Length: 117
Image 1 (cartoon, rainbow, N blue to C red):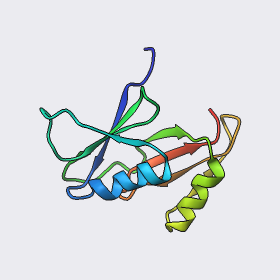
Image 2 (image 1 turned 180 degrees about the vertical axis):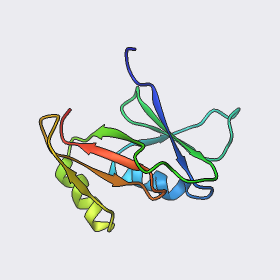
Image 3 (image 1 turned 60 degrees about the vertical axis):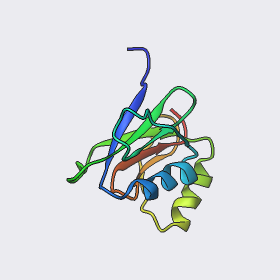
Image 4 (image 1 turned 90 degrees about the vertical axis):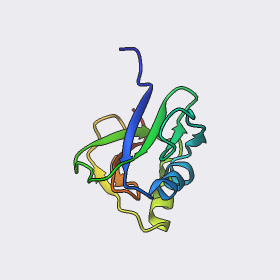
């Protein structure tokens, strides 16, 4: 394997726009166009011009420990935005050489946020 191309995150029907706002406004991703041949529900987001996060609307619940991790440039700024929005934050032990912890997007998907990797 050379790199991760995308991560697919399941969100409940109707939760796409609220989740897009989280990934764009809090984590700094950029919404990109989804291929027209695919299910029009959900959204695609660009992380860095190479890696993407795909939001797929589906019925059912998410697994409580499933997650993906992102490294952010402004760790303190992201934590401040999470606090402003009243979103949960669970600090974790440093295992990568910097602060890290977990939050959840508006659909309940677990997202690990890292200061460094």
